[in-house]
Amino acid sequence: MRHSFSPYESAIHVIATQLPGSPTREAILTRLLLHIGTRLGDAFDSKLKEQGLNYTTWTALVVLYSQPERRMLPSALATVIHASRTHCSRIADDLVKKAWVERVASDVDRREVFMQLTTEGQTLVETLQPLRRQQYRALWAEFSEKEMDQMDALLRKLLGVLDG
Image 1 (cartoon, helix red, strand yellow):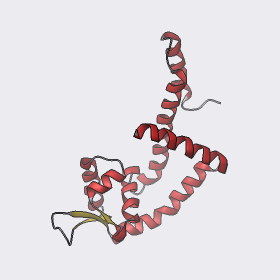
Image 2 (tube, rainbow, N blue to C red):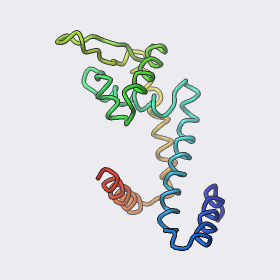
Image 3 (cartoon, rainbow, N blue to C red):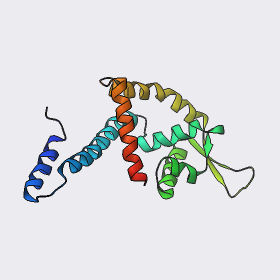
């Protein structure tokens, strides 16, 4: 079966013949994961673009939604969504501009400013969440519970290696 990864996989095999000793299988698995990550992002972003969102801004909204009082410090949000503080500031600016998030000073320490979902932001999350659920179900429909458990275990094992 040919798919979007086939040309890259062919290139890896050619390089392996030109440079003996190449870790071909490891290179293919690594590049396949990167390729799939890009494809997943593209597929999931396409639905979000209609709402003026992308995967990162959507993730920020969902994480904020999951928090008590629907708010977090930008530094904590940056850690959770795996973004730099600078990038998180840009995300916040965008979400504030769209009226989905507001900046709220802490009652305890006025130097702390939280990102907090607005009513519009909460409504957006609640409106789009069923679409996301459909996307997840469609993506994994071809996999059995056992296969998903195996995938989960293997990906977590790889993450453990990367996290050190």
